[in-house]
Image 1 (cartoon, rainbow, N blue to C red):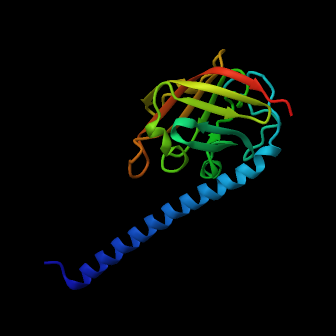
Image 2: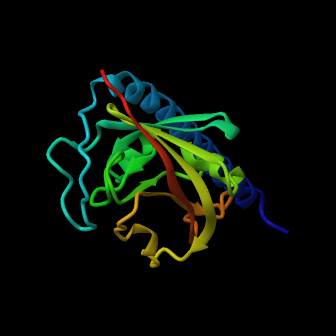
Length: 201
């Protein structure tokens, strides 16, 4: 039978671990909410995007600064509206879905790729399905995409990040959605552009 001192130590360790997990989870939720509020306030001041193709691996154009709000993404059927920031580092992804630099900027010709955390902003993707509408609004354009398919890949599979001649949208998050710790796979939503309107300010 475990000595009383050991039992007390185990209880303390378990309590400390549980408290830490709760704290980290609460911190992520608070940061994601506050980050979205800040991104929403900054969206009207976001820089205009030009209709240009930017191949994978090229630097982001000067008017796309890391951390700035570049688009508003909505999925009507899932009652979801998210503000997209430029960049895919942890700092940016805690604030909201991040446009991956080197892929086509929102509103540009080519393959636009947006990544997000599965346990905050992109948790909603677990319920997305073929035929769903995704709207992407930039300071100058309103684009409507239709989901073509969803699939799961290994982290080393970067096919969904590659440049395309036609306008496409890929949303990427970790998978499985309820995995504890670092998820081993990636969930990808592939959508094609079905309409585009230029916003005249």
